[in-house]
Length: 156
Image 1: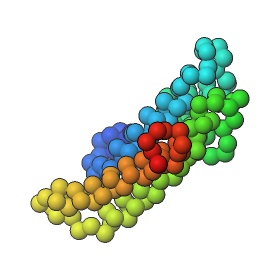
Image 2 (image 1 turned 90 degrees about the horizontal axis):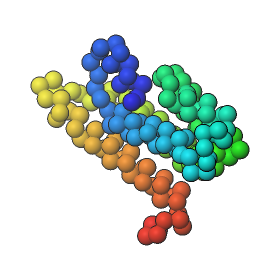
Image 3 (image 1 turned 120 degrees about the horizontal axis):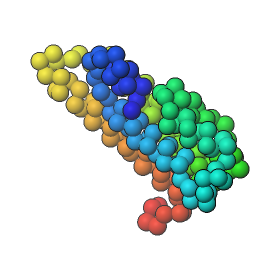
C-alpha cells in the first residue's frame, strides 16, 4: 500500500484513492518478489547478510519498507551481497520507482486543478484516474520491453 493510503487508514481520515496507490501496491509486491527469489540461493543458510536484512526491512514497518526501497533504488546492488536475481532486477525497479514518483507528482498537480463536481465525484475524477492508470501501466510495459529486449520472444 502507498504511504498516503496507509496514513489515511491509520488516522481514520477520508482519502481520495489514486491510481498510483494501486500501482505502488503492484510495485511493492514486485520488489518483495525480487528480493525473496531463491533461484540462486540453495538454502536459507546461504542468504547473504545484506539480502537477509533487506528482506526483513521490506516485510517490516512502513519506515523500514521505505528504507528497503531506498536501498533498492539507489546505488548498485552487488550480487555477492544481494544475490544475482535482485541485482539483475535493480535497474527495472529503479526506473519503475522513478516513474511512480513522477506519476504521484502529476496526480497531485492534476487534482489541484480539477473543479470537483460535489454531486458526482465519479464524473470529476474518472477520466483523470483512467488517464494516469493507463499511463502507469504503459510505462511499466515499456520498461519491461526495454529491460528484456532480446530475451523475450515476440517482443521487438
